[in-house]
Image 1: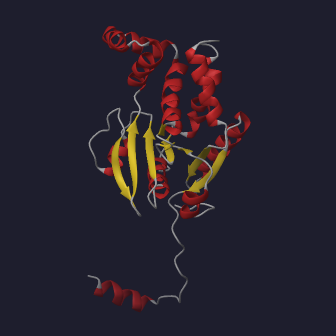
Image 2: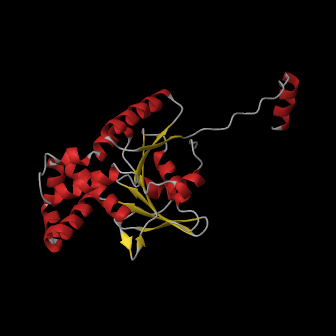
Image 3: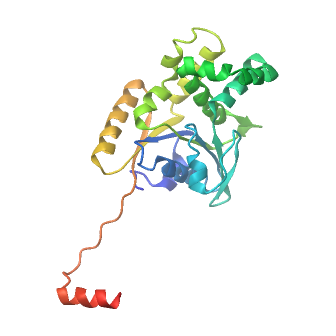
Length: 259
């Protein structure tokens, strides 16, 4: 993994508190998001690594059981830091939302049995992204006593082909509600995502298609007003040092010695 700035510098001085990691499928964005979370948790800091696609990619990467809809310890970081993980489920987030804003705890759970929640997120796809990004916003801004619960939140976000639509929650919810809690929440999420507290990092490989998608994603994110952080080139290896040419006889002897 390579970037224009060293991880230690990023962890110590980066003003952003929410780091959104996207990239074309297959570029290793989940691995990069996990590495970033570990780096930001160094020296006693606490970070939260979040996924929203239901793939359980974080659990697979760390070799753990599937993550539930709750924040739990994932790994220790150098210097006494900690990385916690959360797999956000849209249905659970909606139940939490109904309980928080409408006090529908038991009633909300009854709605799930009737299939109403699945129906709601199906007919209003934008609502799903509002719920997912809303939970990420809540974790980013949550306080415990006089300090933030997490020093940084790292989001393993959808791929570049969907990242603009996923983050642009205000436009998606304009068709759903003009006023009320949903409108208020989507506006507050949009404000956070467009503020200096957020950085959207794009992971790529040194291949034609990932690079083109990266360029397209950066252009789209910039047009929508989201702060682009770093373009991270993954899978880079240092060049093999140049040396003298090997003769055929030396190659033959080396192969024979190696069996």
